Length: 347
Ligand code: TYM
Picture 1 (cartoon, rainbow, N blue to C red):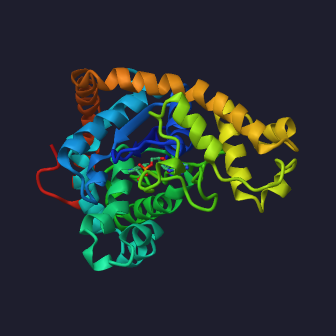
Picture 2: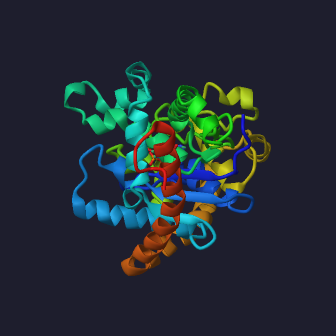
């Protein structure tokens, strides 16, 4: 396989209620990767409208996710921060990929099944084709690494399948045009650390999610100290003291979840946290967890508030990022046009 320019890409949907799972599973990793990589971080507004979004709310949410990126420590000058709808290459490449991906592949996507629920006939075509757009997001930048939470694993496998089939189907063209033996990289998912799947505070077997009706199930990035304290105090636990080993945690999803959250916030391993708190009462641990979460999230929430109070600044950041993203995406679309054989793509 050809050597590809190393580039990180990831995206977050502007659908409201950014939570601790989004932060620990994704955005915190985005921040860490900036030191060693060239990064492109996207507010995926085209993905958001696969289910109905009130227009004013969508606008607010696009700005809020952008503010969260910046407040968490993403540098939009050194890296690229933009919103998906402003770079037409995403939707264009998604169409090409709709013609590469097979119905059978999309039929296997568990997220579609979960989101469409029982009334599948009434789900949007966009929701069904979502993973193909997601592959386009990544591959229009020919990104080599994608940091995500565990719930996106299947979509990233599909992205690799699409890249591979494109490279195979057009293999001769790709090499005749001088692109080597593959045009798209087989992107590597980056899913690691103690919080790749943060669970609901009300039920340790369910994922923490933006759409869960109970606000007590999640810590939002904009929650204040009192709300964070109250939510952790109410968080479901079992009656035993904290486990002392990873093995003991296996049958105790709520303990596992809270320990994972603590470890991720403190940049420690779950083993380190067990060494410190194994055998302690949950009430004591929850106090320490609250203190840590308030120390880490408080400044982020405050900075998000400050940034969202100046929408013109956020919009300028997005416009600048979109212009820079477009340069990369347009080049890819030119190459793809040539590879596929569209007239007019050669200039
Ligand atoms: P979204 O907007 O649902 O979530 C954004 C990121 O947060 C992660 N995440 C979690 N991680 C740990 N625990 C949780 N409970 C939790 N909930 C969410 C997600 O895994 C994700 O990394 N399809 C994507 C957005 C997307 C994308 C892309 C991602 C569109 N195109 C291209 C990467 C590359 C999504 O809906 O994420």
